[in-house]
Amino acid sequence: MAAAMAGSVSSHALSSREFGGLPVASPRPRDFQRAAFTSRGSPLRTICALDGGKKGHGPLSAAQAASPEATLVTAADPTPVEVIDFDKLARELDSTSPLEIMDKALEMFGNDIAIAFSGAEDVALIEYAHLTGRPFRVFSLDTGRLNPETYRFYDEVEKRYNIRIEYVFPDAVEVQALVRSKGLFSFYEDGHQECCRVRKVRPLRKTLKGLRAWITGQRKDQSPGTRASVPVVQVDPSFEGLDGGVGSLVKWNPVAEVDGRDIWKFLRTMNVPVNSLHSQGYVSIGCEPCTRPVLPGQHEREGRWWWEDAKAKECGLHKGNIKQEDTSPAAANGNGHAPSDVFTVSDIVSLSRPGVENLLRLESRKDSWLVVLYAPWCSFCQGMEESFNEVAEQLRGSGVKVGKFRADGDDRAFAEGIGLTSFPTILFFPKHATKPVKYPSEQRDVDSLLGFVNALR
Ligand code: SF4
Image 1 (cartoon, helix red, strand yellow):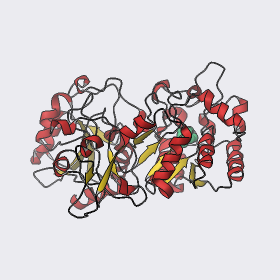
Image 2 (cartoon, rainbow, N blue to C red):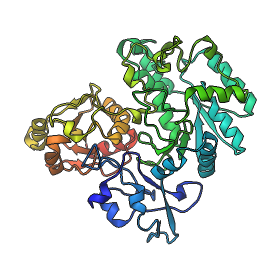
Image 3 (cartoon, rainbow, N blue to C red):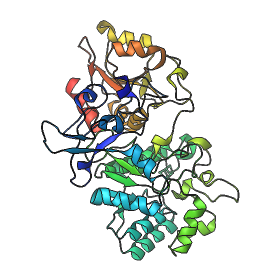
Image 4 (cartoon, rainbow, N blue to C red):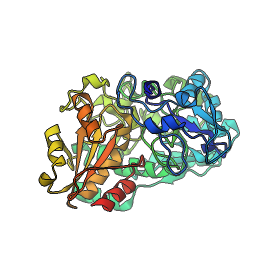
């Protein structure tokens, strides 16, 4: 069984039925028990194994799931199934051209995949898709804070490729609530995360829920702190796709291996239109208040959120890239906090072990509690941070408190005693029941989590 748990974070199997009607895989029974389960007929899910950081905190590897029999037959569906190993595929495609990778992505996912276009040099993705001769979809997040040049560029791109970009807008009520309470430029004072969450991450999350795969312009050379190990294809560690659950979305990064200078050579050679902001010194382009030109010799990401820590410049769209420097469980000190933590909003109480022990005593429980047992190095904990934060926000004043308990390191055995099987494990301590109830699903979106709480409170 230990062998079944070894694997990397990005390693994961998806069945080929997810890709345009080809057959579906199910996990073998022994894997089902330990490291993966199905939901609503979906194939393997990914979880973090308890042996953590260095070798075991990744999901069940598809290679492990597939070997020795790569073709499976399920009781419910006698169709032989093929398991796809995206780690292996990433290695195979590592030295191929972006055009070939794009072609493979579009071939595999058809209408269930779309290019995420930011209005910058990732227009190269659209050119590559165009060159494949296959139909393709493009979406773009219109945060409402883009430069006028970017809007004009969108129009130019639509005309050049004879496409309609699928613009995605933030929820008007959420934007109103943010700017009415904190003003238009709160990100300069308390960080960009909240605004990005409202204007980018939530709309993106909604969009991706309608897809099985997406294509990004991430490159290794863009951000030494967060993008240095981006593979050309991976199971998305942060977002969910159409079938729901962690592991239901595939992320393609066809230019991951390409140097920024080569992207520009390609754009010039193919005479591709570019955002006119580039000629004003902008390299990386995002929202107008959060992007500025960079000087010769400066790294392109220095033009984004320049008032914040240079090593963590992700807006949440590629949050799975952010890793703790030392990811080993040994680095955890039990009750203490790792150098970087998750679930850090003020609505979530950080519980110590005595705090959890206190919760276990019914007579001391004055409120119901929703508690996540987590490890900061776990990419699936990082992936659910957004939704869990929002759940905490929505439960404020409801009589249900929300907490987190760091359950790796010295406290792991204790946590296993109260229900920890993988990271993250979510427990609900009802006000009037003796035992905590474990959240049974890998659907970690806001609605599912609130449904669980409301059913038990
Ligand atoms: Fe808000 Fe700036 Fe993020 Fe745009 S980049 S969503 S303006 S914080």
